[in-house]
Length: 356
Ligand code: MAN
Image (cartoon, rainbow, N blue to C red):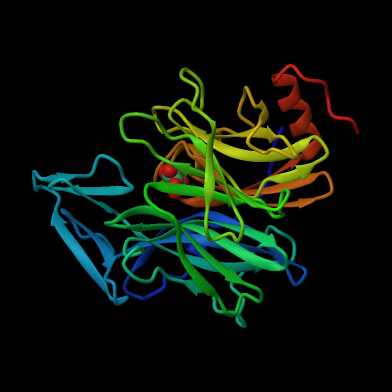
């Protein structure tokens, strides 16, 4: 169904210079994707930390004034929990083991990427809600303006921030649009009726779960009319969490959304959803089998193995070029046919094939 780039992985930490000489890049992952000035651009997530010393764990945290402090613990400390490579737990408090910023790269062929010299290429977290970094940016082009929805991480929790830019030189920060705990926010690229729409993923503690929700807004800043549209499926590949990928793709059959699903072992795969064109809260069809699942070495092992995660693609005619983070460490690409994905997802739902 999905054809991986033969060049995979197309970007690794060896390709990216750290944001400061005394840190190392640990992961290059989960890019937002867009077309601009005839090129394909990726807004990479770069996860960094100081080089690790023997017997110690150290990671940066930013303060509200934008200065970095490095926190350091002895690995032998009984209060330390390092069971998940992404996290550092200490005395009931959770931190991230790396801090992420966003990095802009571009390409003429969609495979070989470089940092442009005539654009600001690094976007860092700012203020009290981004002290642990910013992550997993979706880029949606709405009425000629690029809208960046990204994960804001801090000790206050995990929420969704919005930034806008027309030219990739000047950015307007709009602050947090969806409060904790929330992430995986994908904006529809056009209004439906008189409202804008988004998919988002709040997380429930105890009751509820990691489900996909939809919300409406008159201005992309104020979101309401929240509806839960997709649950996890016990016993399936998407049993523990589901979350939207990039902006839904408009097709004659409905809005096609590529989403991630993870099981209770944190194995992340991609699947598809088809949403009603006029009422996108109606899920018409959903993949039975993943469109893409961890299979190659670079998808099975790495900083956090067994992960395929997407938040960006380019669509040209029938072809989706999907970019994804593999094992939370490297970036890969794959192509899919819109028609073939529609056919499969409709078949899974017992519905007729698309009219082509
Ligand atoms: C999180 C996501 C991603 C990450 C996956 C897998 O839920 O937000 O940042 O790629 O987990 O670790």
